[in-house]
Length: 295
Image (cartoon, rainbow, N blue to C red):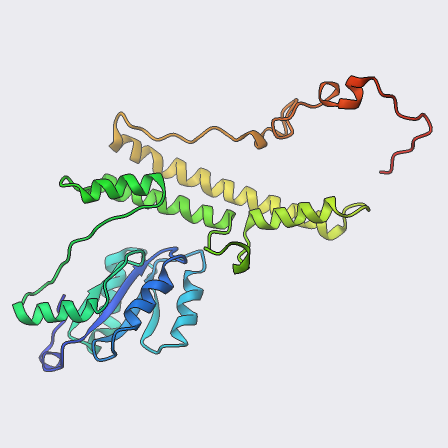
């Protein structure tokens, strides 16, 4: 896409790369590194237009920008991709005659920018576009990818709403569990990992739970309540419009899992309480009368 002025038209073919993104901690460094590998003559600036990420995306971009001066973080406060691209052009458009818009979670061949610029120079085209082969990891992503790769495609407002909905839910998931590849060696910890550590600390300590442990329980419970509220807000706000568009293929929130029935009679994670679940009671074993239980 040209952003040409008379002065820029005389410059060698070059471009600024703009990457609109939101919660792309798993992919953003890879795509930045890919375009940073192209020469400075071709790629003058790499602008990451972030729409308000709540994961580590911003931190990754900031760390990478300290290593390469071409990489900059732009806060896209309007949270609209076109707005982020326009702001990137306003701030950095004087550095190159062309802009190349790329996806944060896509793979590109080596020398991608140089190839596009060569095609533009050869054809004199106002815009150079390329085809895409979609892939997916989750069930929804694989279905969307299959539709995208078919002749029918998957464009339209329903697709965009579903993709946006999936992105919001995935953002919540990344606050609940560690998702960075590599497992424990990455050091990433989220609600699940913190809960596991707290549980281990309590059961492996012979004394009463410490004040720190009790305070930690309250903090984790508050965090879980906050995430639950976010999930409820997302589903109640987005699902009605999506289901209306889907017609007879409406989405629904799955029923609560077994471990959420602690407050119900006979609950405790789906395990029955009382004499029927006490092996000693069923065998008729009596405890010593002089036994004193610590509390």
